[in-house]
Length: 147
Image 1 (cartoon, helix red, strand yellow):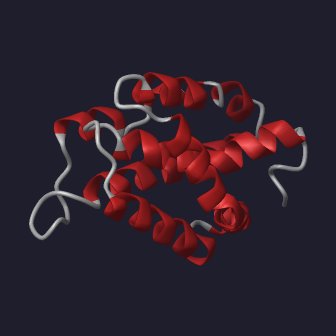
Image 2 (tube, rainbow, N blue to C red; image 1 turned 135 degrees about the horizontal axis):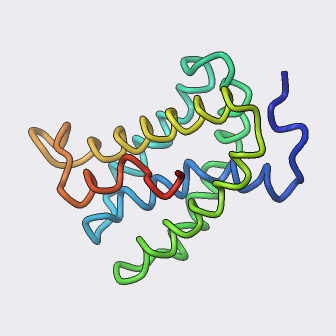
């Protein structure tokens, strides 16, 4: 079943861009964006085309195909001063779209996005650059703006 079929092109594009937005939001939470965070997010998105809940595989295929372009778009918009506010507002604007969709799909999608946020947060810092989540990242990884 194509859970994106009843959405407008703009709504589909916004949902497909969300993982890139989440990547930049979390990576920039500490006011700097490490290459390791961007690289790991790209790998996670690619893996999710076949490892995610089967309901989301087709979605992640769409995400993977445009992830680098969307990531570049959000990186261009990001600043250490305003990045969190701008990106949080972008993600918050997805709530009406998500609430208009199949409830099960929407729940799986939000859970997957939270998992991605955690993966990005763990991509730098800690022992050998792996596993540590900063206080700033920890505050954002639940993506509360998607209520």
